[in-house]
Amino acid sequence: MEKILFKIAESEDELEEYFHLRHQIFVEEQKIFNESDIDEYDTDPVHEIIHIIAIRESDSKMVGGVRCYKKESNTWFGGRLSAARDHRNGKVGAGLVKFAVETIKTTDCDTFLAYVQPKNVRFFQRLGWSKVGELEIYQGQPHQLMKADLESD
Image (cartoon, rainbow, N blue to C red):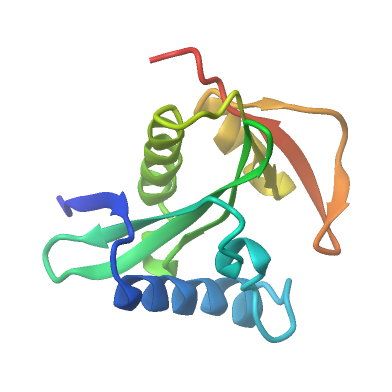
């Protein structure tokens, strides 16, 4: 069985590889963004941000990632959850989400939210997240705002 390492990105090379993976998924494949999915939450030093990546241990290939950023007061958001096409079996995504929640618990976060594509709502619910409100348009596409359970272990 393939071992996957989940960790916080530490180098410019890791970030560059993560941004490349996101580009493949959100720009080329899903066409949610026209040219780039990188925004102020990736680049503005005013925002606290944590990029979490998934690395296949056998060859150190990046197979997924997610970003977490502080938006206001003690509210953090997760976003741009991505898994390489050949790693979309739920294991990489679930590992990233779980690692993100555990990482966020070590910050000043009171509320951890994410905008989730409707097809992924049940996946997040199985990981202990709950819906907040109704579907809304986010980045021009329907998304469901969801909230992590920060109280459970």
